[in-house]
Structure formats: structure tokens, C-alpha cells
Length: 68
Image 1 (cartoon, rainbow, N blue to C red):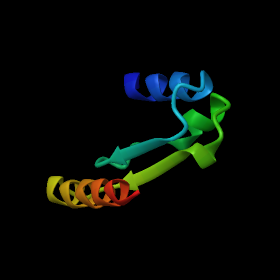
Image 2: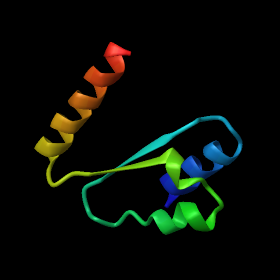
Image 3: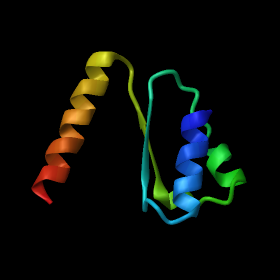
Image 4: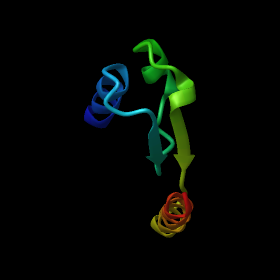
């Protein structure tokens, strides 16, 4: 919940443009962002099934950002 509130506050105050939510438990509720008035286009949801899956996806994201 603390991570949600931090991301919501940062988005609403314009401190960040986008947030990537990595979820390994299936507990992410985009409704939390929506209820807070956050544009859901600024929230990317990234479900993972395991630590290994998370590692692979994070490495892929890093490589993508590194190429920009």
C-alpha cells in the first residue's frame, strides 16, 4: 500500500511521468490508481509468475531502456 501511495503522489505531483507495477501475487488493483484520479495510461502493469520470470522481464526492460 505504501508503494501505491508513493506512486500515486509522484504521478499526481508530476514528479514522474509513468510507473511500472511489477506484481508477483496478482494483488495489483488498477482501481487504486483510478480512484485516486491517476490517468491509467501512465500505469504499466507487469505480472510475473516467479522470481526467475521477474528477473527475465526486468532484464528485458533494462535492455529496452538502454537502447533508447
